Length: 79
Image (cartoon, rainbow, N blue to C red; front, side):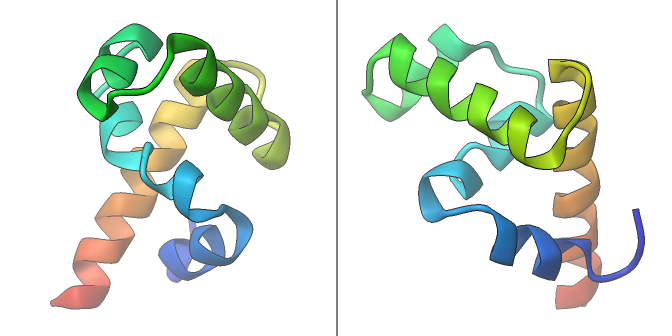
């Protein structure tokens, strides 16, 4: 992913989606994320599937990699 990935992701995803980035980057499952955030499993499932649709990736692993890259870019922008 090119430099500025965080800025692109920040414009593409809403707050509820961005809230999931760290958990997805760590490879956490929907139920685990739901428990952490105190929301229904179905809520996380829907958000994750929407994120997959938005970035047009083939599978969840691609979304998890995308989240890792975005967070890496965000931390390098902050330095």
